[in-house]
Length: 337
Image (cartoon, rainbow, N blue to C red; front, side, top):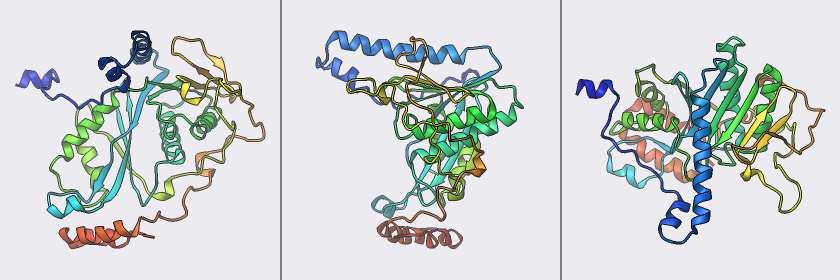
């Protein structure tokens, strides 16, 4: 068993969502030609990630990022928990594919939502911290993710990347895995955290921050930041580009067709429609009146905590009775509609 653990082997089979295209082919509802093209795109994306991951260039860092499935607070085995709505907690995770560092950014629904502004704030903060840590040694940072438009593939986040590339004289690259086959190393963080919190009692959203830190010890614990509403910035006012769509006319490629985006210090954006294609300049006009600005100089996204629904607040007042008195104050002070 000791050798088995040293080799990092496991009998656990992680859950895996099925691809709708592959399932359509398995049920004879998709042609062989379309299925083969689907498999080609899948392999191209995976090979691209493996190529970047195995690169020995120390001036290029490669990351995978994703949002963990919804966490809830409070959480226990009390029967009333199953029938009441609870406070939603979000965990956005970033994993360094080269040195295996993991980063968790946690917030609850009263502190922020799931718009492009929240994700742009977290990613911008993370990039600035990594640049500081590397003391100017980084030439490029590559981020792999799924193609979720509200989270990873939109003009708000693209403009945030443009802003950072211009400020820090660095190349920033986004690469998207193929729909239905977006398994990444960052998913291992989610599995590790889920094992840690299984059968654990959660009294407050901040308890998840503690368990994320305790979830892994080797090679190092995860870096965890618990976020309040004052952390988030308003990035949708930063409009270097109004759109990142590759085409303009009807029938031209759209944003969801993009497989990769690259941002340069001169504010230029390049894109790829396939990972095997050469880079091409984005056919959108740069607004030269917009100048790069520091993260701290951006307007705050929220001036106060977000209000939850009255029904959820009432349910939480019932659920808090199963908690120690010190924990109950947090739920009493939640803003509601």
